[in-house]
Image 1 (cartoon, rainbow, N blue to C red):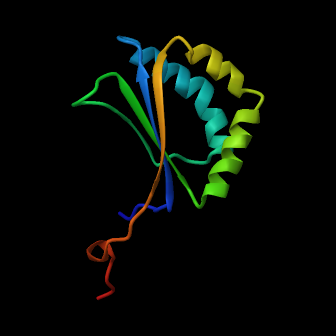
Image 2: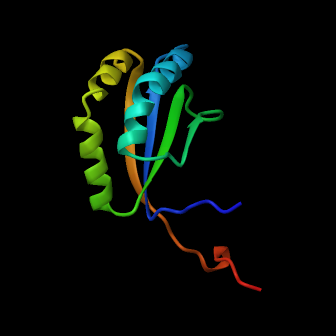
Length: 114
């Protein structure tokens, strides 16, 4: 299976209030995902912490460029349904980290045609 690589990845980590992960995931899926799929496209993945800092929800979104990221984020923020998610999740999110990371091509990871 080959994963579609994007040169820029938005790596988001939300720290969720203790014992509220289930509620957060429900609110995120119901209110945020329709907006995010419409404005950001399909995510690269969703994860929760297992070892290390606990109560963390990680999501990854791929972009073609910084301009692509900025354009899609503006669309998300301007979407008329996005404030409902922000209001419903406000009490659930303790902290948020957003990192933009770039892909690196390693020669040994390149596929060879043999």
